[in-house]
Amino acid sequence: MATKTNRERIEEARHQLVARDNDLIQKGRYGLSLVQQKCVLYCISKVKPTDAPDTEYDIDLHEFYRLLGYKSDSYTGMKTLWQQIGSVRWWLDGETEEDDDILLGWFTKVHLNERSSSVTITFHPDIYPYIHNLVADKEKKKYFTTYQLQNITLMKHRYSIRIYDLLKSYQYNNKIWQFEMGTGSHHDLMRRISDCDEKGKPLIPKSWDNYSFFNRDVLQPAVDEINQYTDIKIAYEVSKTDLSGKKHRRYASILFAMVEKSPAEKRASQEQITQELDLPLEENVDDLFADFFAQHEAILKEEGVFVPEASGTETEACEPGADKIWENGKSVVDSPEKTWETTPEKTGTQRNKKVAKDTGSDRENAGSTTYSHRTEVDVFEVCSKAASILKPLSLSASDILTIAQTADYDLEKIQQAYDVLKSNKGKINDVVSWLISAIKNGYRPRNAVPYQAAKKNSFTDYEQRTYDYDDLMEKIRRSQH
Image 1 (spheres, rainbow, N blue to C red):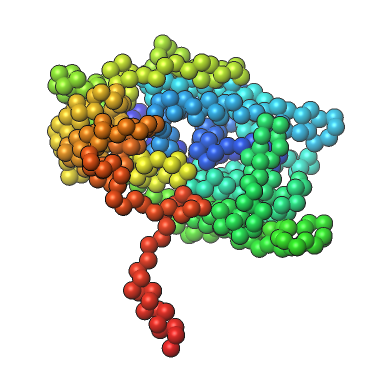
Image 2: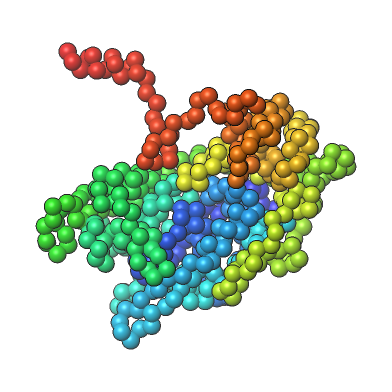
């Protein structure tokens, strides 16, 4: 059987189905960030109907990065992500007093291996019935929800996925669904989508008391992304009357209307997802650099540059070098962070431009340079020299490549950024992100502050819109006549 290319693997992964029992969606009370939600759904998409409850699932981190747009700050950052997900616990209450209340968690085992760039997981046995071999039963009012993983991979607002999940779970025989807002009842949308503490108490942001903020920061972004990327279209209207008919001085309920997209509309959404994923750009990039480093291994060793193992070598997840993050429901002590000289890491993973904005890192926009106009020798020479310049920082091979791409393979830019870094007396938590920012903003050794920083809105993390003021003034003048 022919080996699948990176693009073929991504295409296959994005069309995998995410299936969950509606009870898990509608009754689940757990707080997950945007990245953590995507991570869990990505893992669930790997479950097949024929799998056994104790099945181990191998997660390719490069596929994970590329498809979900996640940018790990470091290997330690990736370990932290999985450890946080593994530590999440919540109660799922039974339907009646005779039914058990179940304490659920996502995983019983998480083994992370930097050498093979993979994660091996096993789902918690109590959660497996809610994600595996699901069958609808109308008499018992048991239903489940499915959709393609690609529907949520490009969402950038953390509440978009949660609202989409809820609406999809109610869509099986409804075109409208109504929630309350700010009432604190079981039907309260704010309560249903907010984070919760260890005791299950909702942690509803204070700003949501103001509907204009809740509409701006939660509802409108979620509706826009659901309509843009998913298989349904939705709209909503609010009312000052709650579900019991009681009237309030402020908005107390919200009515969602939802309809399945037409085949043409679904194709348009898929085309947009393909375009934003930019799949052709990175086809066989990993293979290109794996072969490239193999061809120049001797030179790289002379330059002191990291040399990865030959590609295609399979490594057991629990062999020496694999880090156990979560096993048998218990957190395992982290191993020390590894360095360039001692820890091989698969290279060549270019970073996606389209990522979740809540990562807060300048890595987000790195790696936008294409390879079509550069030869392997050009890239090799720059990367090997860049590795020599940055060697004291003990960066990984993929970080070196990302920095080189950001600098458009200009060694002077890399050297200048590194000189500014050495002269900086402040504490820097993420060296790679700082270097990327320094290269993009042209930091100078005498002034480490960029002359023009990107403007941020005080309430959100996205860049403010820029305007053509001459055009606006002309429109204003025309409107006055």
